[in-house]
Amino acid sequence: MAAPPLDIKGKAYPMTALSPVPRSRRLLLSFLLWVFSLPYFTLQFARNLMFIHFACWQPINRDKFPRLSEDQPKEDLKYDYFLFTTNFNGSWDQYIDAFGLIRKVRIGLNAIWFTSKGYPGAWPIRPFKRYIHYYEYQMDLYYNAYPGMSVRDITSATTLANSLDRFVLDTADMESTGEFYDAFRHYINEAAPHLSEMGKESSQERFLYHMHSRPRGLQL
Amino acid sequence: MSRKKKNKHTSLVTLSPIEYRSDDPENRIATVSRTLETEARKTHSDQVLRQCPMLHMARAQIIDNVIPSMGQQPPDSLKSKYLLFVAEIDGEVDDFLDALYNGPQYPFDWDKEADARSKHANFVKNIWGQCIGYPDDAGSVFFRQYMTRCRIKVTLPFKAYNFTVDEIDRATRIQAQFASFAEANQSLGPDDLHKAWQDFVEHYEFFAATGRLTINRHKKHHGRHEHIRESSFKPLRPPNSTAESSHTDGDQP
Image (cartoon, rainbow over all chains, first blue to last red):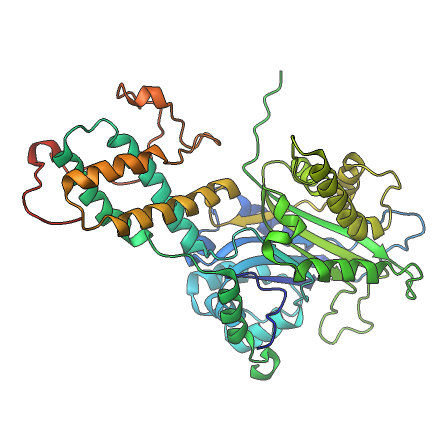
């Protein structure tokens, strides 16, 4: 069996895209990002998907590329650039499909990305995939502290741990066996959905590798 | 005294110029690339980044050029190659960079600590040490200063959950332990179950480290848990459980 690719760690897959933004849209992009960063918005559309661990959207103005030495030539770019990094569960196709197919996500995505040069919109899906794929960068090193866990696994484990903390405290003073028995029976029914087993890193890497083994360029 | 609120989560994005000469006379690109690939091929537990306890996820990529807009003439082109480093961490950036540069501390094993320190310092030297403007002086302070110069402020970060790495690790262990307990004791009667539960609680890993659940062992014997933060979980006991408590129906948990 071929070795799994280096950019997949367990259930998580990273993506980095750097797309050009015309200078005339710089202020608009900054304003949109500021609006979306307000507490009111909270990027709920992304949170509801339950498969994105972390993501960030970041404009890099054409004159803001770090220049740390006098010898280093100054960059002379026509466009600003829009950096998008994300860590998600599942395959690349599933991820992009979700962006295109779910209306609320599509609206949010279009609002953030439409300032990018040539952005075709998140629907129809084929030009959108081609656009993302075109501006995507190869990963050199990727690290994930909990490779066997998806967002749902983490939510499940932390939900269980917190509820178990309370259950341990609630039952600490119970002297009656019968009372404890009833409380435990009630608790175990609530906790049962959160008792799933985590994935293993190596098996998950192989699993995802096979999902990714189709050459993406050919299906566009 | 200023009271600075400690960040729960921070997204660190840095862009460090590596080389602008096309022939790369000092093999900087090759050194960085080789180091990243070697690190990427290590198992999870052997990775240097694994020794940073506050690190959720990280990536490092060599940006050798921007991808020009489709059809743009002449195409945009970078004059230098850059290293993009993105890390999702708990707490402050400086703490993470110190951990990355110095490695873990072993208070009672100086040799081991020296080995770890050397390994981490070499890792930093072989990556950021190859970049333009990296100070000749070794030390985590200079490393932090350098990364500050390369840092790009993140405008719109997103995180799906608000837990630290410690909390997630602990939750995973608790989940596994409780699943084993539930599976092993599912056929026990009330008396044996209560006894088994008391044994389980003796080894239960309470979570007081981050203050998410503040708990005092002696207080619980007096039934005073008023300082425990309310969470969104449903009541754990069934309504009127005391009055209706019975174990005569023969149902097992």
